[in-house]
Length: 173
Figure 1 (spheres, rainbow, N blue to C red):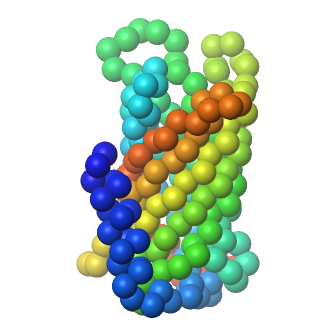
Figure 2 (cartoon, rainbow, N blue to C red):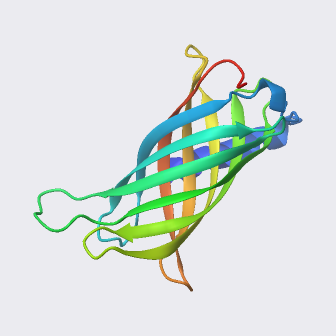
């Protein structure tokens, strides 16, 4: 996961060397979907699938952002591990002049549901990522990110991850 941190550092340096452009909310896509994997150090399951859907809100640079993180366990016949379902807001504060790189800040709250016992606990996450548009695709982005998720009410777990995002072309109604 050192590569995730290296890519985030590279974006910071890149945006620091050029004058970042303000984000034109009218040019942002209406819907973005994606999926990828996230690593949880010390977790019951070290890897999880991380799926997102985001809807552009208004004319600014905000998205309504929903995330479902499902741990992956191999080779065991135990009860399912709880998924985390959270929703919140994603903000794009800046981008490169060409729009090829966008910085994202995401804050979410939701619940972690344990299916076997039907109990739920609060889940709060904060994420920083950089979405790199793949040149030849136009609407496909790769986004390395790091997420801080609450492990308890007083501690957090840092989770580096990577996602492939698809931005549906055209504006929303």
